[in-house]
Length: 150
Image (cartoon, rainbow, N blue to C red; front, side, top):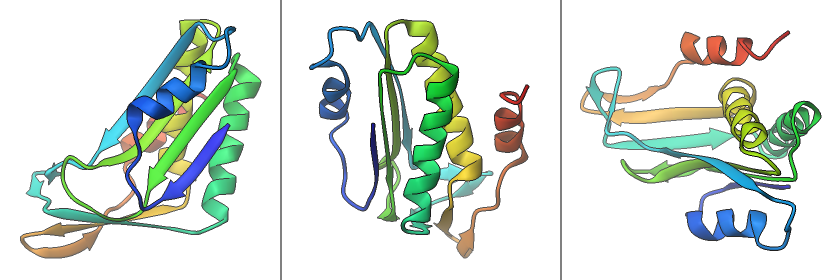
């Protein structure tokens, strides 16, 4: 398992390849790549700054991946989340899950992303024509995470 909170850009292809290259049991890798958009809630976004709670954020991400592993066959997983200043089209987050079968990989990847959005301590500030503003949590993110509860 790889968990990283970093300012630096990451190499998507290299990260995916690292998940399966050394393990012949891997039959599927599902991934999600999140990017900075240039519009949010109908307003132009020229930049975004992400902040986090060091130490606590990495622990929260590791806990989420462990929860996914308890539900599905997860052979390996990578979660990379960027912090600091970002521009539209910059990658923000990578969630990738390696499993023996696609169903487990897809479900675990989606679960990790849904819980990352609601349980990991990140804060986003967007630069808009009206000035900077903090991004509020979305009800749709809470609803997405709630569907995984029994």
